[in-house]
Length: 181
Image (cartoon, rainbow, N blue to C red; front, side):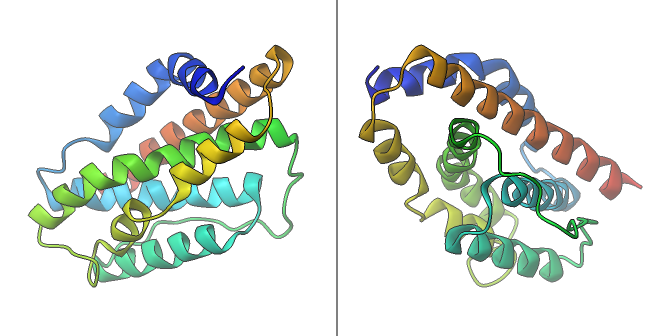
């Protein structure tokens, strides 16, 4: 199955979950909504690290979001596990990568919203600036184009993507509640 078909399959399989996450991200008419987004994204990045392991890109994104949270004086309440969990199936990880890499495309839109709130790449929007400018999406597309994807593999990739969107939804819900408290 060509990579464009894999991408279309993943997009279709995760459309509902993606819409729920987008709704939770919101439009940031208030500073509290942006703070909730950052807290949720910080939690989601920790979950990505649990599944994907540490990478330079992920380390940089986590450092940038930690700095943004400090700029806004927001505690995200992320608990880091003592020991890394099982990394699981490589195809399921590819599904998680689809969600994280796809978020770099969304970061381009969200960066404009953060700038409207007065944040930029040096204060409050380091994460979005870095993520929007990353090559994560191109890297993901290259990986799915590198090898044929049989239906069994696609099912595992799809399951990973659905799990990642579920984790993102949970993270954003928790962050909303934390900021509202």
